[in-house]
Length: 484
Ligand code: ATR
Image 1: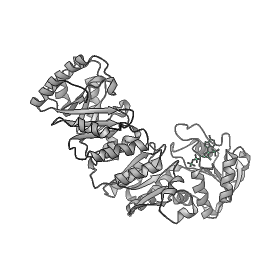
Image 2: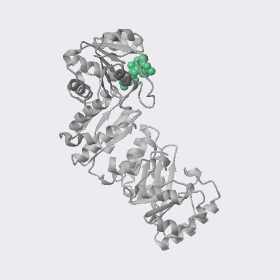
Image 3: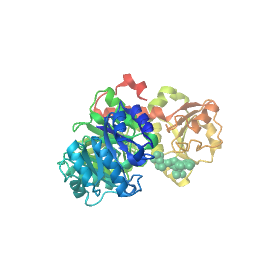
Image 4: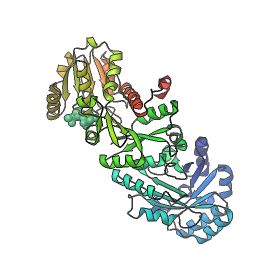
């Protein structure tokens, strides 16, 4: 079930949010601690106006809520609500309100016995979850906040151990925990919480629309194939949109999730535990991941950069779809014979893959980079010439200028690696950034009369090839326009 956490300060505002999302959700959680004055609200009115299965929660500040009053006042408000026969009431592990428990036995309200830890994963996490489910009929709810890849692995290892507990809600908060919210059914969790993005209920909540339309969380089962993207940062990635929509169009039982990673070997252990079948790789792991591959597709021999990893039996196999992702849009827009000299701005992993691609079609390439050391090293390695980035005067001789740095990417949209440079007609400016779709680099190129290619085309082209590697099926191209 998808549960919408209602965080507004009045019942009227909560109703608006609820009505906007009714289509996506199965139930709501009313956070009494967010209301202006929960004493003025009639539980019966809430029940009849919401008219949906509801969890009543009155969260204290120490448990991540807003309530700072006395336990006695909290008890008396919850007591009133417990008499109104809501489906669920959330009581924290340390909360002892025997009279409320007694009422719930009589009226069928179920207690969600909750535990929250915003600092990480405690060593006794498994025993805490078991403690939450000691009282017959209670639903154990455990929410922890993994801070890194090692915490995420530790959290999932505990989730694996509590498989035998039937009635439970287990989840990880924050970006590292997002996968557990999406995969809640695989974990045997009764529900997954989400909230209105303008007033988020907890770290890592996504909107009901994303949960249902993007990730189809309600349709995930033990059999659903899990794919994803790893990187740091990674939450801004558009790849989940491309892949999940394609799974839907190709009628595949699969889901694609962003996994933030700060330690590759921990993530690979997690991927094995979760049965991840393949993943995309982005900054900063495209080179480091190669150390973990047992099999490699031939293009990896010439490009020391891997953006696609597939599970083959017990090992991981690497591919690079950036190469075609970069070249196909270029070749489809431009008569390649018109290009005499190419300039690549930047000397990082993306520049390395792009230089390989340009060399593979016989181009003469020069690197322009801020750091002379990085630029020279890559130039030496790839047999290119090198110029410092401030030698913009030289760019006049180049037909193709490819921007491979992160300069100009959201939220720094006003930046460009070539401030003051005047593009000219006959030049082609290719920026691999896709947020924003039109970078300052591309805008200035357009103003100067140059032709432009944006990063979205590269993203979608490499994603299509990646989809085919992951699923061994052709990409459902019919719907392509709609996808992106
Ligand atoms: P990726 O692997 O995605 O290419 P990277 O390895 O961090 O990312 O490479 C980033 C590139 O962007 C580098 O060439 C970097 O220049 P330096 O070698 O001088 O560090 C370039 N870059 C990053 N920020 C920049 C800035 N503000 N101005 C100019 N170049 C920049």
